[in-house]
Image (cartoon, rainbow, N blue to C red; front, side, top):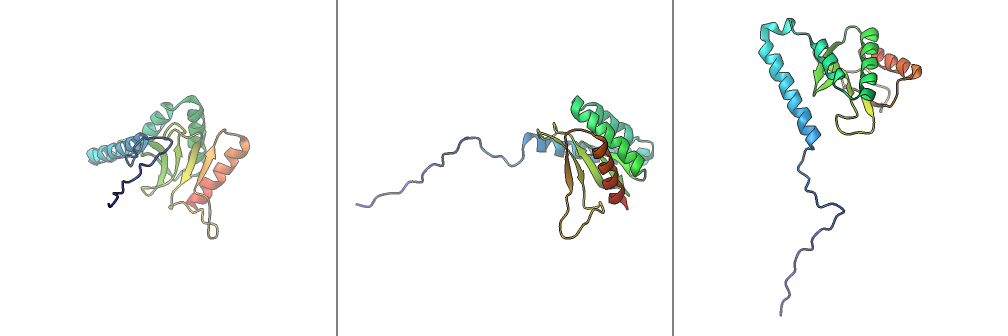
Length: 158
């Protein structure tokens, strides 16, 4: 008599099904789609639009701890690299040169992280050998942290 094999069920700590994107990731993609739609709708009105006020409004919506960090990052970027234009990018405050994002601030709340981050895109000139960091965790804004952020931002646009 031939026995039949049955597949063993996988037992994991959680029986939740992975759907691909988290709710937070889907939300960020929707925000990005909305940003692109808004930019397209503006058309000739784009020059009249004030992306900085949109960035400041997004910062104002953040929980207090992230808001304090984001406000300082915004001030440091504006002072250290005035050629960077504030804009929203996936619902996050970002700073672009010639339309390309160079750096951005990600609230800890955005993806339910334990800390906020300051990230840099491949447009940033932070290259240092064969490997270099592209994102930095921010837990508090100290004078040393402010100085370092200023240095990174200036180097990024150099």
